[in-house]
Image (cartoon, rainbow, N blue to C red; front, side, top):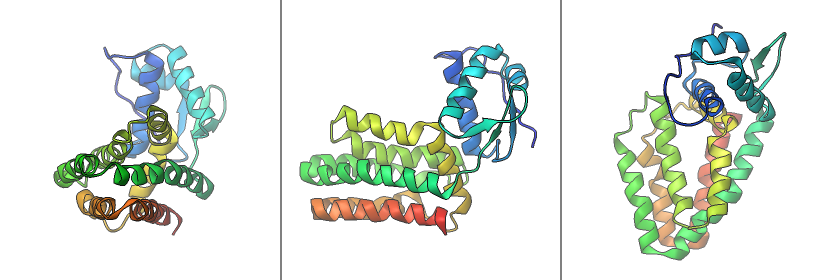
Length: 217
């Protein structure tokens, strides 16, 4: 598959960070598929930047296990394995299960913040993969944010926003056959938060496991 990227132009952040983000987002959007070959010189030309930031971005993706070396100055995109999926979702259960319990313990104010974000996702265009990802992440990140624990939030971002998380979400969308509106998917969580901490934890665990099952079945 031929990989094409738009030039970076003038943008905030380091060039290596932006190159990493562009490649990661292309994985989410399906522009780059598993098995695609990424060649440093070609990417540098397409992004209109030097090879150094592209090399740094590719090495970062390699460290995350998303790509592997293939030929001179090239890499190939790995498919998301079942073990990758299991590790990712186990990590989510640990972080987001705890956060769900704390939201219920914090009570009506915290729950109302989450409910507002869930309702705001109702108009998400389900055909726009980036929009679907952003809406899902916004809901789950809000659940962690209201706990007001910066370490927990950092762990959430590490799981969701690194390239492996984006690739896994792309794989989820490729296998999802229900395409249920995002607000409907998350409404049971809000109900469980109001029912109490144990119910909130169980609902979040079940919600996350349902996503994992989409991958594995």
